[in-house]
Amino acid sequence: MTWVRGQSGNPAGRPRKDDPITQAIRSTLREKDGPSTYRVLLARKLVQMAVGGDLAAAREVLDRVEGKPTERREVTGADGSALALLITRLDGANGNPRS
Image (cartoon, rainbow, N blue to C red; front, side, top):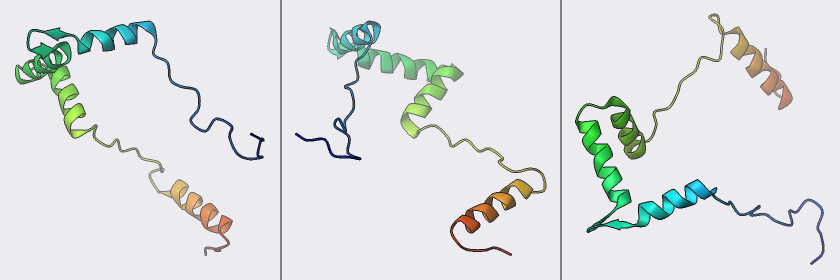
């Protein structure tokens, strides 16, 4: 195979390798404890803790089920001048002069 300029020889990248503790945890979560896996038991316990009033557990459950809420950040000053400057620069870069 010849090398082509601009084309990666390994587009998928190096395979991800979990560290030993992560491998051990993943393996343990797949094991069974009676009819359920530890993964299911852990999920049940987390939900029970959330229902029992543990706010950290409730936040974790909701983040997993509903997704994390979008964070909003103000990117301009009080008068909005920074945003106006950014828009002017972007329009100028595209050949659209802005008055």
